[in-house]
Amino acid sequence: MKYLLDSHVLDWAQRDTLRLSPKVLAILQDAKPGELTVSDVTLSELARHLAFGKITTTLAPDQWLRAALADIEVLPVTAEIALRAAFLDWTHRDPCDRHIVATAAEHKLPLLTIDEKIHALVGVRGLKTIW
Image 1 (cartoon, rainbow, N blue to C red):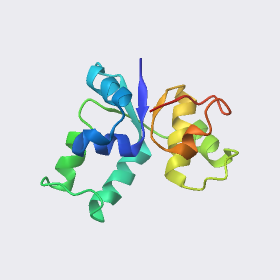
Image 2 (cartoon, one colour):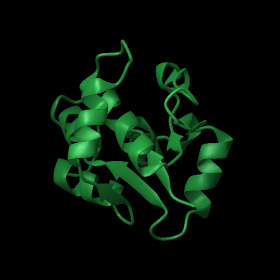
Image 3 (tube, rainbow, N blue to C red):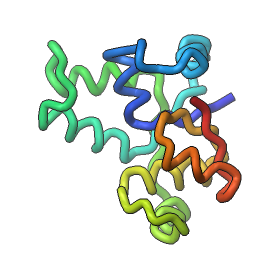
């Protein structure tokens, strides 16, 4: 089964697995090649966190990001995802969250996230989340 990782899940998987739920940690540990994906916006979000010091690492930022993405498929924006993100009937205005939700919904992938605002969308927009 394929899964979409929210940005914080990919970050925590690299830096602090204790922050992950047991269920999410098991999914990540048991995943076979090709089963873990991220939205392309996750790369930009994590790069900003690296640039502004929200993510600290002993690696150079480019090395950390490449290592985090090892064996992770990056799903690019499509016209359908862009439109779905823009027209989501959701008051949450964070463009990255909207894009990630739209990617999960468009690809019909369960989204691994702790975000309660996203969990509130489950079923309403055909979205499934796991934490």
